[in-house]
Length: 104
Image 1 (cartoon, helix red, strand yellow):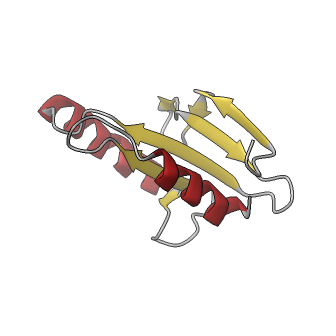
Image 2: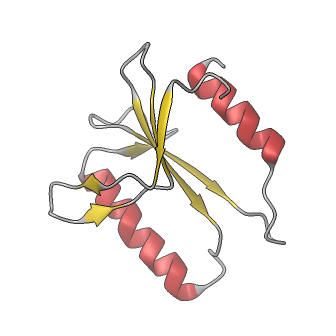
């Protein structure tokens, strides 16, 4: 689908600190060997959700998985998308993001 060779939904990711995370999608680019972990944030307006996300983001960074735009992480790139203020998603924006990342 759209230049994505392989992906898994909520595939377990074991971090070096022993934590287990389940990114929304794990995407493998067979041509480059790159691995992308995709998190879609749907409830950042909720304080508990935002705190959990900030903790999770810190764990990703510590594990060498850096958000897109912060350079390539040694162990993967984190893609972060989020709902808009009304709870909707920008499907065209996500499609452009995938094309940009994977040349799809």
